[in-house]
Amino acid sequence: MSPFTGEEHRWLRVAGSVLVVGAVFIYALPKIADLSEVSAAIGEMTDIEIGTLVLLALWNLATYWFVMMASLPGSNVWQAMKVNLISTSVSNTVPGGGAIGVGVTYGLYSAYGFPRAEIGLSILVTGLWNNFVKLGMPVIALGLLAATGNLTSALIVTAAIGIGLLCLAIGTFALVLRSETLARRTGAFFARVATSMRRVVRKPAVSGWDDSLVELRTSAIGLLGRRWLALTTATVISHVSLFTVLLLSLRHVGVGEDRVSWVETLAAFAFIRLLSAIPITPGGLGVVELGLVAALITAGGDRPRVVAAVLVFRALTYALPIPLGAIGYLSWQRRKRTRLERAKGTRTHPVAPEKEPV
View: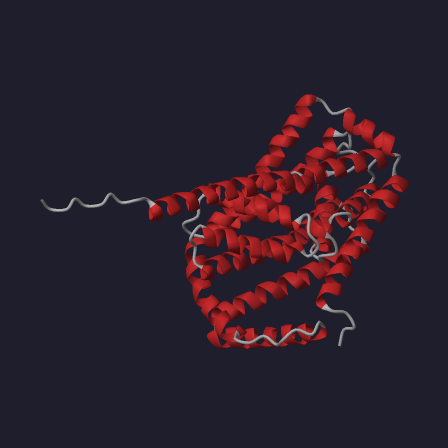
C-alpha cells in the first residue's frame, strides 16, 4: 500500500515537474550554451523567416483538427478547433494534464451534443493512431539513417524497442477487432491491471471493462471501415507538420544541412517523441527541450544555435496553444452564457393574457 494519499500524490507530481523544469531551464541549458549567444541567434532571424515559422506553426495546429473531425463524424472545424486548443492548453500547463485534457474534451464535445460513446471512441482511436505513427517514425528514421551510414548501436537499440512496442500495439488492436472473445478477455485483463494499480493509491476496483471493450469494438469497426484512410492521412500529416516546424527552426537560426541533416533531425525528433510519451512534466516541458538539444548537438549542431532552434520550436508548438486555448475557452464560455440567456428568456417570456369574452 502507498503511504501517500491521492492528494499527496498530486502534490508530489507537481513538485517533481517543477524540479525537472527548473533543472533543465535554470541549470542544464545555460551550462550547454551561453544564453546571450542563444538570444543573438534568435535575433538574427529575418521578418520573413519569423513569419514563415509562425504560419507553419499555425498550420501545424490546424492539422490536428482534421484528425479530430475524421474520428468524430458530424463534427466541424470550429468545434474541433476550440476543443483541441482548450484541451491542449490544459494538457500543457497542468501536471497530469493529459488525463484532464481528455476530460475537457469529453465535456466540450458533450456540450455540443455528441453522445459520450462517440466521444470516447474518437479519443481512443485518435490516441491509437497517434501512437502508431509515433512508434513508427523511429523505424522510418532508422532505415533512413542506415541508408546514409549514420547508424549507431544506441539508435538500433532504441529503434528495436520502438518496433517491438509498435508490433505489440498493432497486434493487440488487430486481435481485439478480429474477435469478440479476445476483446472481452483483453478488457478483463486491463481491468485487473488497473485494479491492482488503483489499490496502490487506495482506490476501488474497476469493473465492466470487458463489456465496454466489446461495445467499443463494434463501434470501432464501423468507424474505421468508413474513416480509416482519412484518419491515417490526417494523423501522418499532423506529425510531419510538427517535424517540419523543428526542421525549419533549425534552418532559420543557421543550423544548415551540412551540420545536422534532415534525416538526423528526423531521428532526434522521432526518438525524443517516444521519450516524451512518459508523462514526467506537462507537455514534456524540459524533457523534450533537453533531449532534442542533446541529440542535435551530438549530430553536429552548433550549441547556441541548436538551443535557439529548440526554444523557438517549443515556443511555437508548446507555448503558442496555451494563450490560444485560453481565448478559445473564453469564447466558448461567452457563447454558452448567451445560449443559456436566450433559453431562459424563451422560457420566462411573459404571455399576454387572453381577453375575456364580452
